[in-house]
Length: 469
Image 1 (spheres, helix red, strand yellow):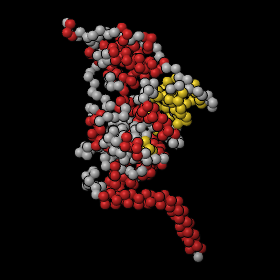
Image 2 (spheres, helix red, strand yellow):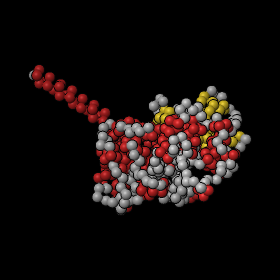
Image 3 (cartoon, helix red, strand yellow):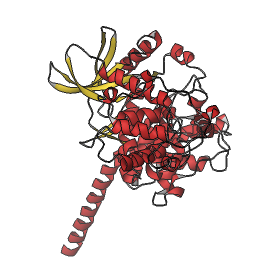
Image 4 (tube, helix red, strand yellow):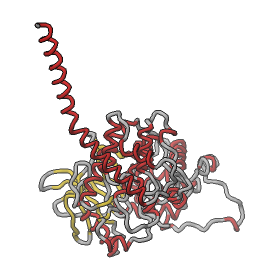
């Protein structure tokens, strides 16, 4: 079962400390004799320090992880070993790659190809009219992102450029242009906006709002586990962003910690619409039928199955998986391979461990909300972002979640996915009544307060009159 991006595989178990597989400062020992000797590496495929001059260590690390050449743990161990062997070494990238080759995590050929790929993209001259390229921000599966200045209005922007090797393929060009057009349909404070798009001299690009900050993934990778209210204050704006996208007929299909940015001003931004799709585009849906599009740790069951009729409830599921990770420090389902992880999202025999069972500081209300967001049968999830927003606001006020609690009660004792159509219709009707009641309650709150004050004043006036008489 294919996934949409090669960067989304689960981390495999580490094979041990790479330093332990080296002998002193030398490469790992190998059996002697001609039968065990490795082919000589061509002179043209040896690491040339000149090829490393334009590369950043972080870019090299990201590419190694994305390609699955090493795990995060193996990479960290190599970096630590590199620091011991090459203290004061200025060429960090070269030292890191040589350490990984010595630890047999990379071959010379792999290192050479990695350097040439990254070097070629970074050295490519960009000349986009109206924009001054200032530097590289990062690289995704389809494009390189640069920091630039829009000269006409003197503002900093981000420019995403389709990778040169993909620009030779019409299908990749179509998908890239499609991403820009989809993103341009949205205008919301919690969504990274698209400003411009075009192609010049074979370079396909689109210009986005420049967002300076860090992602939820950055903080999770650093070991952070979010407090309940802190997480809710981040998830709520993302739900608002999904509500806006849904109103424009769009589903994101790749909501995950990596695509949620926290700006320096504290604004939450949903990014990367590379997998977004128009729900009304039936041809688009048919073209992708049977494809598992999304990120394994956060993908919805219907995306795993490659269903044609995926809707906003898939995004609600992925946001629930993201919230789960934020408040527990663990992904909802783990596994040795992407296929194993995705199978667990679909398998009704595998139940989700409630987040409040893993982190006992969490409220049971939050547990109910997450379980409702991540119901394997989408009929049991929140039907729209509006429903989810209602419950998130309840939790932030310290109240019980109205929709999730009702669903938990109405579905008690019934196996996931075994509810009859009449029961589902009844539950949906109850949902509508609950929303109406919530709206009425909110609208009448001020009237009740005013009435209470009026009655209190009337009582005081009556007591005064009785005293006078």
